[in-house]
Image (tube, rainbow, N blue to C red; front, side, top):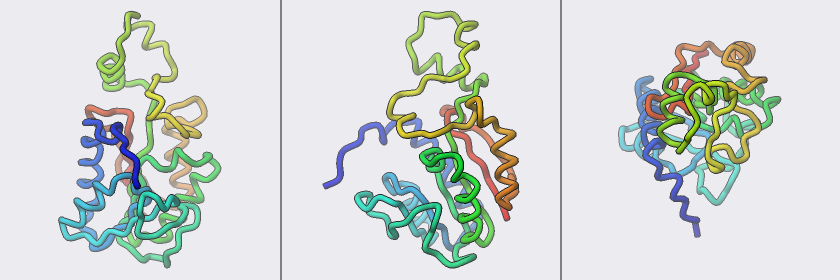
Length: 202
């Protein structure tokens, strides 16, 4: 029996799900591989739109179509149009980042779409921080913080996050290029700036 996770019904997550669906569907794919199942919201919605979605996850209890690891995906080269991994890569040590991207690029005919938690400060992130955390300190004190506190659920089991001292955006982009992919665009979700999307192509 699956466990109930009320944190997965957070309104901010549904904003992020919308971006997942839009970014994948805008590529007009016939097929899509989604790595990391969670609740199958994106997969089910895309299926409703006519996209043939295959889900893969290393955990059997989330009921993926295929059980497997992002570092060694059991699919042939160029077997799907789009490969996606949303809020997945930070759950692996960073040494697996480039190899995982290469594996995703190997399977995709065209595009790779990912999202990564981004803790770096911005105007939107400051607004998000002030809105979601009761805080009596002044704004100047908050701006001095290098790490934005997230809930235990959001940051649990994260080996790294974009914007921490060792993983600035410039490094992430450079490593993406090392993996043989180009960054078409990147942005943070309005209303949930903790999620950064990177739209990549071969």
